Image (cartoon, rainbow, N blue to C red):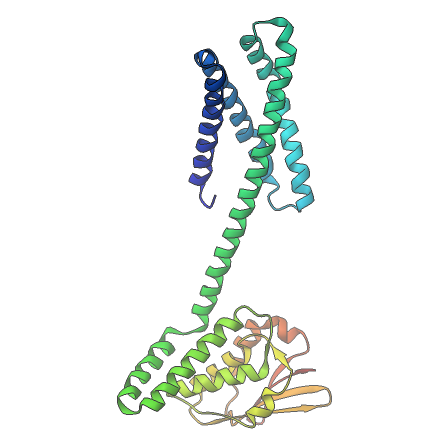
Length: 312
């Protein structure tokens, strides 16, 4: 039931089954009574489906986000409510259907029992279908969100530039072209992975920067002792350092040097040779990762060094 039409198709199928199967069973036992009871049975089925649609369905949909226990109580309450709604119509139908007054009460009880069973099966089935639809919708929305995040993280200009560079390298040096393809694949893989996480290792961020630098044509970023940084179990928000260094790489033509150190219970990522204060870049990063910088993280500019620091 992913679309609204699925609900009505299901109702049509239920209507056909409830209408035809009992009549087929009756034809095996007493075929001569089919014409006599067809219209009455059709009215009975329509009454039940209308009650389920206008009463039970609205009640179940209203509590679709409730807990499982509350959903169960809601189903039971919906069954009771729909049968209360049908008490008077079913009694009128009994008066028309059962001509023998002595059997009328018994026949009325049978109709109520059939209705209860029908409503129980319908409500359980509708709740399961509704849960499946909600789960499918959440998965679809989550997939769209991940793709949207990924699209925002990978700039089309950078991607096109990388593909153009790879195309040129294929004609010049196949080994360099192969390395560039590997860097691009690793960068895309990391960005997709990072979009699904709350925190990533600082070494993974710098490794992604290294892949980006191998693909870019502008600027130069030198990471000092990357293997040592990769050993550190220190986490940062996904793509925080990557975005910071990408923006700096685009703005500053001179080489940047990145070092890492731990002192007095804090870690420091030091970006050297930043000749002028990158106010706009700093402001953008502080705003984009506001929660991270509220939790004792800092981004300061001192003596041509941009320093990202936080408590261990």
